[in-house]
Image (cartoon, rainbow over all chains, first blue to last red; front, side, top):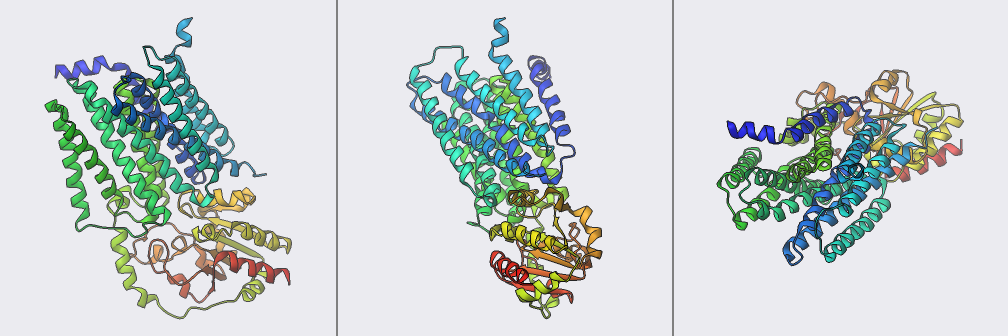
Length: 102
Length: 463
């Protein structure tokens, strides 16, 4: 039980963020017209590409002679970039279509 | 002063752009700007992470990161720019898988750096399991939408099997966390088991439900990213990940609601079992089918006052969206009222049809959503169904044994005449027979949508 309380008090800031973000996410989606479901999903898909930050941190923290970590990290950064760039560009292309309305 | 320019501040700005971006994506007028804002925030966060890193880093590592980002950018950009509009859904799935894989790889690398720190190991293991499931699941979803794998594959008792397998994975993960195991073998075993689970999870789900699955896996990847954020105490990963995780879950539920099916029904199926029963009912619905030629349809349309077009995925596959726009303009020039009835799940993803038709400059106001268009069918002379099937299947109203029973549909039956363009009598994506084809008021215009429509437009021009 004390471990649990320790955990809470040590990570209070992050726990705040998690809880608040859950509510923000729910509120944001609220009443989105069905028309925009696909672009919205695609946009959210691009945003979770933020995982690339983790991949970059792995690379930055790795020892230069740790080939395994470097090569896996390299792949992780590459895949993360694909997620980010591809995700945003696809979303933009979808939304480009909507803009043409009168 | 120095603090203002620190990484934390950049992360704060980036987090705000994600929230703003997602919010703006929910409104047609601001959607595009929202996407760009989030993209700008992401770029800022990435650049900041690289250049404001505290600590000694060998220059070879910077070069490797640069090369990886460069390759990823070029490939991602080109693929996203080149792909056709009909292929969008599977592309989203593919990119989602990439993110999941990235999260899983982070877990694989970092595991050994955090041995002994139980909390960190917990986040690493959790992130790795979720990321792996998201990756392999997305790949299967991609293959299914792609048509490479279009039949649901089911192992006997797959629901029980899958659940037992999942519990096994979670149990094993928990064991690794609490035993403080250092074994690489165990780690890779867990990694591959999670990959296998992702495959088993998506395999039995029918292709028609892939949008929901992708949306769900999308929120999984968000969660995996958030675990990464927890591990590094990295705020931007945490906010971005949790935001997508929660928004993605709500979006998934919204999609299910549009199809009028609970999420559990999508995942644990009932859909597939139904199709066996449905094929059995072919004889019951079987009757005579009226066939019409392009000129018959042209005459019928020429003398009507109001025409409603129901576009479906068949239209997209045949790349017939331009010609249908031409048909619409031609009819309008003859003083006929033309509208498009858009079912919420027409195409392969909610909103897919709108994207396709918008591409051809169809007036936004002509796309009418299901609730608004349904009362109008009564006063409609001709309903023209192009490449759609399940969304106009009356079995959803009157056949409780049908797998789509209860799904809201477009009530095209109420119109005076129904013209259905299909390539053949084959049942639709869900594999269910459609009694609408045998309705007295229905005429079938067989043929590829593009070819049939071109003929129809030519006939109309001659009148």
